[in-house]
Length: 487
Image (cartoon, rainbow, N blue to C red):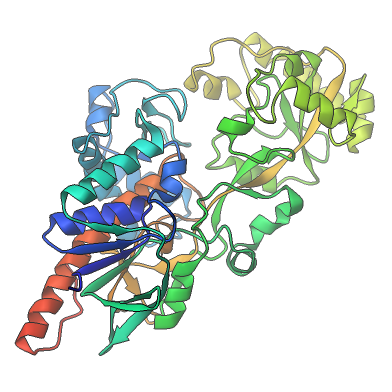
């Protein structure tokens, strides 16, 4: 028997869509290309950005979807569709409360990082909106899978959809493993295209500027299937040229929580040898700041900072930094002047930057870049050390950790896929990285992707269920179906 709704992809967006459609009364088939559901959501910290939540209220934080919307649009220079973003901002908090109702625990406690359960600063917002679950992204996925199974969703792993089925001017199912499966509606939630070099070249060439330093932390299923489906039905593509690249050291190859973190006592300098940023600025803006600098960017620190790196990580450890320096890939010198020569920056500028650091933040204030406030928000009370113990080090730093891509099928506020005319493609919906328009040129902060995926996944599932029911009724009556979906 054919299902009412087919969901392609079992990451956060697909699971949320399937659970929601099934709870609305639709029979749902979820097809996952990998061995198990989870996608990039399972690999994430699970942080969820939302406004006007019970967690915020429990901490006395006053916030609203309207305030969230204003910040979101301003940060993205109003280059996103306001109707879509308002739908996301209004539905993010209800989606978070839904997760809490499914057993995801997010305590009303102050959090200082993406792995401390509670409420934290997600990006550059004035009101904290980063909700960190106790069991990370894996906990969210497990809760969503339970919800799917409780509502009768059939989850089929190891099944990659080959193409969509079009019939009578609408999407009417999929072909998977050579089999035709019909449905009243199809939701595309296949993730991004971070693992497809050709699609990166076409839709996000900025990632390739990192060259051999580029590494991908997205799930293996992020192969761009959504774009191939879109071409088949003439869907519009939004978000080209956009994605999330986190700043990293050239020697990192894993997410920060595995690679480790650079020393707190460091400064970032550009090709002119000048410090130019708060080194702990949110990755919502830090990648763009680094990209705008002349010449390579270097993280400069001293021997005390190197020796103070904690053990247990893959890359940012005292031993690994020393090996990189021994190999000549990390610059090391006995004086700041010699370090400047090694990295090709003016010695007087680098010397002035280090002296300015030693006179300010180690004493508790950073009047130039206000990093003392960022450190306080992260719960770091101890002042950084001066940079004054030789030898000195310089590690090339650049946006090279590819987390997600933003180019995908353009959707409206009801998660309907739009064609080149801006009209809905009947029977087709999308969410997560596959449904473009929520993630913009500026990543709002930690939890933006997870919140976008689950929130729009729920909207897609709800609208798809309504559309499938309408299609079934029209088919029974022998009448053409209206293409208007419920919002």
